[in-house]
Image 1: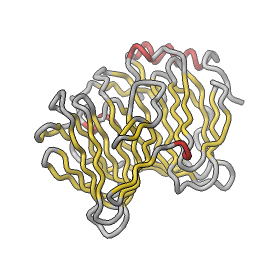
Image 2: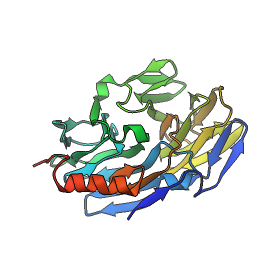
Image 3: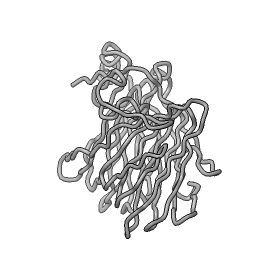
Image 4: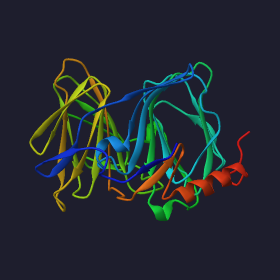
Length: 300
């Protein structure tokens, strides 16, 4: 099934001060086989403010599920939470063949096309986020690239009862790795009871915020938004040239766990068909033919 997206057409959003916010969205349950359970979010639900994210799956995987599969026109990003158990075997036709460990990030910029496979080693129980990030049209046919960020190389911000891992980009004076594609900040953090954390967006960024565990309260341009476990919201900075604070606080008696993504939007329509995100149906058909004839390589 093809999904053609024209940004800002498929959902409502509202403005408050210097930001435009989508509606709060619940993740939709997704179960594949006996070893993969997820809550899934799609760009069309967030009125363009999720751009450049195409989809996010919050998942647990205990058995091999997908097998070798192709990607093109996007970046596939794997974020492995620290409470994962065991090893996550990662392979692709760039020649990478290693295990992702709890706390790791793997960014695979598929570009013109690559074949990829991830599966838990025996006894593994992997908890994390699988993210599709759109590529600008001029990067959709570039050579694939990859970045592996190991947990022990991730900067950690600790203050005001928060512990936030800066997987990519920058926040609160700390700088992490940069993606092989367009710049993006990815934060994954925990906040103690009745404590808080603040991240500053630039005047050209979108952000997507997700409550992984517990309940979090967002304060954006004097607007308060509550997100319960499994809910998310996206926002766009509308006051160009000015920073926008996103305050994340935990109003509950138990620890909260959240993720935040921020980046400049691409603002381009696209067509998605499964693991492919291209600018037109003709490009989808071309990359499907490339995969069928082995031009994207093989994984045994």
